[in-house]
Length: 529
Image: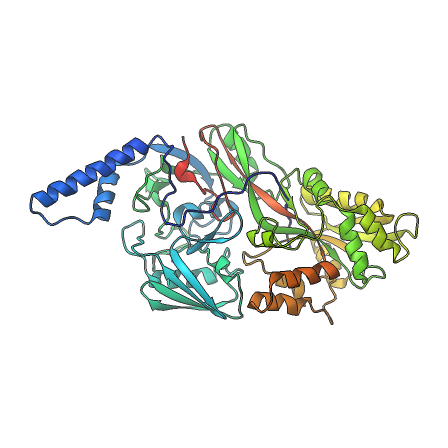
């Protein structure tokens, strides 16, 4: 199990453009240059036709002309030789940060965690069958056409890849329907299954070697020049060329030094998931990256008070998520009043049950029904924390102890080394525990509602209708509010915050930038350098 983040005032990135290609960069200094390129292309085509020669394909002509106008801007980003550069073998965060530059997936998730098509044109979900049609005329960086066979090859690679196998475990097959359409088969129905089709699509047969990046259809492609690796702008990606023509890869050995390397000019930007619990401060700027990583308070349902749903609800009301966000996570998190990602656009249709500031009076009223609360019986609980947790989490644990004391609940904080922490969870030797978990992009809560789930410690599933209600939502049999209302009644665990990451950049980049967890270099086409 891992750690988590909470709610911010940072605006969410806009949704990607519906068409494939670079977003409009009309405010860039390249606008006039692009117009001249297009004008020159038209003149060449007209001249060819007047001369009686066969007319050249417009797309090919545009590509050929554009190749003489390579963007000259450059930035430097980190990578490590200790990990693979092939996305189906890589495991490190620093190398994984490069994936969205080199490869496009079928879909990407926007700032609201909603799927937006990239290589895909559209999809149809019918029970356990997920049909995807591909965009017309998509080509790889080497000019070869992308087809269903490449999608199938990429899927088979991703199924066993460290970065993607967990999210694809419910996918049992991918079959060709035509050269421009595939069908994915699910082990069980999932209304959000399309959110998981975010693995990179690569050219069939090119992803066999860990040390060599396969051929992709992304905004940049991999090259080695003078013995040094870099990413070169893929001029076949779209009709609009960015200012940044090359992305130089600078080797790093320790992620902890990245901010120093940035501030002394060794690199121009980098991403951190803040799993070290240390907020980064760039001389130029940084922006928040919303993660699907939940920090929660686990509850042992077999305790004298904790077996009561009203007591668990009182605990939730007593906690101020906004204080945890601001004081413990230094605003690198978003308050979570439901178990779902607070940035998920789907939630906007539903009312959340609690204020992020908590409700101590409401908590005391519920506790009073049980003879507890302010001026009544004092309750003693033990809070288990992983000794190796990051500073954000440990600070959150101390805040929880403080806030529960206001409603006459005394909490003993117990830190244990990771192995002992896990043993205590397995043995039920806790009242509360602080946990965090990286959820898959389909918002799957199964880790909490299956007996062997990674976050099901202490939850009494016997006789509970929550697992069935969750399965009904996933299959499309019930709306999300049915599950949410029942969750709020039972409060099997207490959601606290969703974590943020950070994308930091130097003064070399002269424009405000946007990032999503799926697409860290979201608007690199519009960057000014």
